[in-house]
Image (tube, rainbow, N blue to C red; front, side):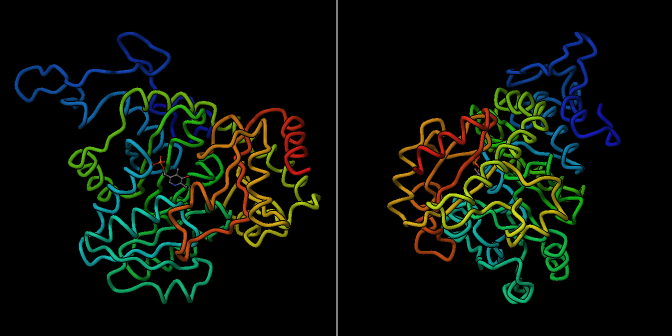
Amino acid sequence: MSGPSSSGFDTRAIHAGQDPNPATGDVVVPLHLATTFKQDGVGGLRDGYEYARSGNPTRTALQDLLASLEEGVAGLAFASGLAAEDTLLRTVCEPGSHVVLGGDAYGGTFRLISRVASRWGVEHTPADLNDADALRAAIRPETRVVWCETPTNPLLNIADIARTAEIAHDAGALLVVDNTFASPYLQRPLTLGADVVVHSTTKYLGGHSDVVGGALVVGDGDLAEQLAYHQNAMGAVSGPLSDWLVVRGIKTLGVRMDRHQANAARIAEYLLASPAVSRVLYPGLPEHPGHEIAMKQMSGFGGMLSFRLADGEEAALRACERFGLFTLAESLGGVESLVEHPHRMTHASAAGSPLEVPADLVRLSVGIEDVDDLLADLEQALG
Ligand SMILES: *Cc1c(COP(=O)(O)O)cnc(C)c1O
């Protein structure tokens, strides 16, 4: 693999896993659409390729790239973030296993664990990961996984990855970190003690709102083998065009994240001063409860922020509908700015659960447009 781990992040983003093909010299990883590969005699595989569910050279490039960026031993690409999560849970859990699910996890993760995995005998307990006693109390002898999202979606809470890893490991559980919001540019959980990193590559890694995908990255060879076995055996793999788009997106991850977070910081400041807003949730603000931990484990605060409207849910819904440049839509992490109402949109499946989010909350995925235009849109939407 090119882009040795001693190279800088942006160099690896452009080169890791992307050595030019020796025969043709393509500077860009080719899009391999073949579903099957010619064998040189029975079982004589070229470079290990046999059938495209089991392996495809475009997917290999993405997987090696993700492993390099997250500083893991292996990356695995899936058809979506949830497909990656499902494969992970069914690899490491069995009937009777238990999962501790931190804070306000992504609604789809909560649904997968509470409504789907539960039917196969996997139990779960929600816990505040920043309360060490509560976390220890939630862990049982059957706990296989502590599931941590940081920053969380949509409340931007921060969990201390190193401390959570210690507590999980003391109990013999794996620490899984959903690193979708930070991206490996800002945070590398495996270097802080996590065992598995989960991504929805649909978000910042793809970066252009044109591909759905997911990934797992692991720091341990045995676990990597078990997961690779299940990736093939369960079959929820990503397709080659998706892989190609994510590899292409990742090349600019660093420069995009720099702009996303510069714009988000300006918007956070603007919202703090707005009388329409009762609270701004952004880990870059010194008054944010997770600010100190974020300073310790992240190299920046990212492009996601949420805020609460002083006049409640009606005001939040009205604001969502008045935005112009910010598009009213689910998802996040693309170059364009998006706004949404988590309570009614992305997190509707958590209603009535301990993970329910406030109804006066508005979430922004701050894009990389000119910040003055974004501020003008905020002003007219809240005005
Ligand atoms: C979107 C998202 C997921 C799920 O990924 P999909 O690609 O939509 O399946 C998981 N975690 C977080 C934090 C997300 O934002």
